[in-house]
Length: 395
View 1: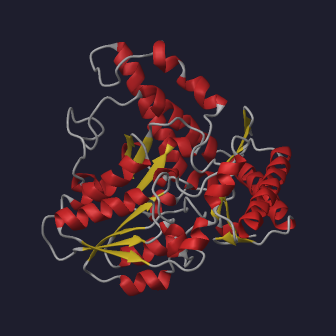
View 2 (view 1 turned 120 degrees about the vertical axis):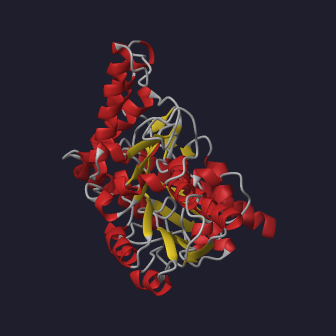
């Protein structure tokens, strides 16, 4: 898709709000604006039912029950609520180890550090292989009856790796550990209809799946809810786990987005997205420049992810030269501005130089074949210019 004069290939950073989502959200900004926690009049009752319906839609996406869905400001808050909320209730006991995938989102790693620094847990990072997978044998080797929590993301936000959550969770639960899954990138990538049955805690983000920014959700299994310490105290809304007036329009938007990715057409859209991604990768390879795909091939990868290493070039130079014609990124949007190589690319074994030469391209459902053809040509022209500039500097 094109935004003005810019081809947008950064859908893993954020997606445009779908027209169906926006249409259903709009009335709740100015018409049906009642506080859903106002229990004494019909306007409050009406919006309360709307929020309950949104929770039910999100629950259906992952195979949960509506009362197990807690709306948050996004996946970062949901991840913090899951990890810190659970850890802060455990003040003693023999289970003091926490296992995190080494390629997790920064907010999960930061929450782990907080549990280690302030609550005395021992946090260990599970290594990933060259494609970004946490192997079941690796997890099993690290597990023992002193492990309290395991957190492994469903789909990696930088290299698109789709983990075998069912197998990983099964072995973790066998040892009595609680299993958390950051699933922010997962709705676009795969069917989640049974995921809640495989995990104890799960995090989602609306703006990664064609919903609005500022809203996410934590799935907290019913039997775990009395073991979660809230991050936000107040009026005791949402089962006492997340106080504050919920943003009705945003909840509605997330519910609609969730329903879109739970319906019968979702898999066809994923297949079409994979075709576009493969067309982009094939087009770049045909240019003849030395490039490498970081991460897994085929079905085990997010259908809209292509993390490409341009050998001999700096990713920031390429992206700067492409402006304002093409939007892509060097990795997670949440780490932009931090002058260090991607921890995900380092985790799969890349050197700092190799990581610094890598760009994540993420086409979306509205990306056209023409957009991809133009993008490939633009990248080719930029590589030519950068290569000539380097020759001049070296002369």
